[in-house]
Structures are given as structure tokens and as C-alpha cells.
Image (cartoon, rainbow, N blue to C red; front, top):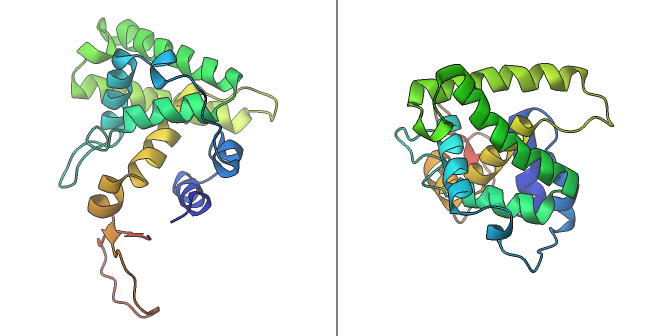
Length: 189
């Protein structure tokens, strides 16, 4: 699967566009700096926990096992504009502050129910923001986090081979292939 197909499929999952997609499609410009220049190990661990709350481990591996936190760090560093990078990093602080304000504990110290509740609040907030957002308005940080979580997970080896049905070497096209309700979606190689 090429990068353009992967971005298109994730955008369909999200019901719209992916922030920074123009950079993804044109080929991210890897900088000489490492992920640690924007994200230290604590940031990556924080992002892994946020992603795991969005896509927790069930019968299939969760976002943490797909190393989505590290993926987010690379994508923000290499593919986001400086303005979006700042919004993303400031958003991590806002997420921690919102958790502290609501539950008197930082996000990393919160339990699963508290984490889920704060992310549900942020999901409502970003949905309302995006409904009234003008083209020139900045992106909402939670929109970025959620998009990168889905993109990172469903384009990872874990996401493609264990969360989705995977056929490494497809044969002939079969438009009548049986599908039962509840079957996993397909990942295309």
C-alpha cells in the first residue's frame, strides 16, 4: 500500500481530511533533528497512553503495542507546520491540565475511566470547534491527536495484520467474496 492510499483510507475512516495530509502526500521532509528534539521519552509515553485510551487492547493489540506514540512524534516533527507543531505540543499540556482540573490528577495518573471521560469531553469539544471552524482558524489539538492515532495504528504492522483482515499476496479479484456481519475490514498490501 502506498502512502497516498493509506492517507485516503484513514481520511475515510475519519470522515474527512487529515491535518497535514499535503505534507504526508508530498513526502514528509525529515529534518536532521531527532524525535527527542520535540518529544522526549515522557512525551512519547504520554502519547502512547492517550492513543491506548482511544484504541485500547481488546482481542487485538492496542495502540501502545503499535508504538503509536513514537509514530505521532515523528509525524508531528516531520510533517506538521511549525504552527501545527506548537498547537499539538500546547495541546498535550492542555490535556494534562483538563484532566487535573476535572479529576485532580494528571493524565498519566488517571485511571482508565477518567482518561476515557476526559477524551470523550475533548472529542465533543473538537467536534463543536470543527463545525464552526473557518479555513484560516487553527486546527484543534485533539483532532490532530485522534487522526494521528488512527493513522499510526491502522498503517502499522499490528493494525494491518491483527486488527484488520490481511492478505499479503492477493490473488484474483473476487467481487463476490463472502462477508459476514462482524468480520474485520480488509487491509491491502
